[in-house]
Image 1: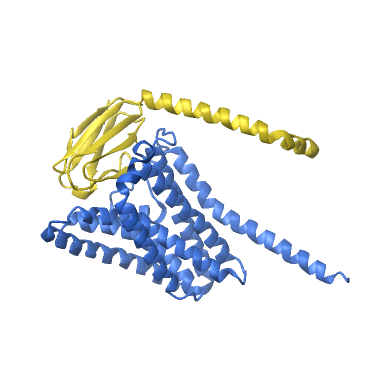
Image 2: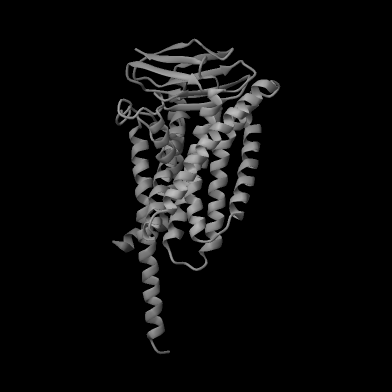
Length: 269
Length: 124
């Protein structure tokens, strides 16, 4: 068994698995079916194939930091999608189903592009060596199954909650995942030297090492880093708080509009 | 006050365009200057090993790692301590900026060959 294959596939599946499982609970609650998920998987896998095949070209962009820039852009886009999904989930708009379905599809597709590209590139290294390739695929399958099991656990944990707790839990998890995406994307732009790097704000390597299993889980859920820079930490916090703040603002604007239209209807013509 | 703000905004497009251009040019010059001043360290990946496996870096200095993967297979440069990860295709090169770092040792590894591709950045 190739341990590298297990770990790589597991890490990537964990990150996407947690996100997809929460989005599935939302789709389930709004009775959106599974067609959107099939579309998202097809689009995401196609996107990953295109990205993997053009990785050399992308990497050479912007003086060899194109990979960081594109991955960062994908992750910032996922955050924006999650922000709008949280707004729609917490609103009572009647037209939201179609928009929600589009956003869910886009989010899963983007997450798959981000995670599946690396797996494809990893396996491409074994092409031409069928023995090692078959061992790597078998080992990768084990990693995939463990990652999917964690995703399934996450899905059923949310669905088993009392009905009134499901929506707040979905929003909290999505806000954490989204803020983690922002932190990771910011880290990538620091790596590309597009954002300046300074000394870490804190160091929690002794408490929760990133390489440990809990550390990897924390990374998958909220982009945990033991030594974040101040910029990452502040943007994480800003992205995390922006979601509940946007929901409160959205609700107050909706309520104002409703009360204004009610007053308009009461005034005789 | 509101009227004053509206008046300012009325004339602001040209002012903001000039301002943006000046700030943009300044940032570009700064970035070019900063990039020119950044030390470059070459690392080679060969036979799923890093050469050199120990990279010496001055403390509190930003450094540009120019990693050349001379293997035909891809590799991923990764370090938890440096907070860096980057896929490097076979027979291609990649740039990874690290630092400024405090003195100490920062291990890195090749995620696609994590039993052999091991190295560390030593900051003095």
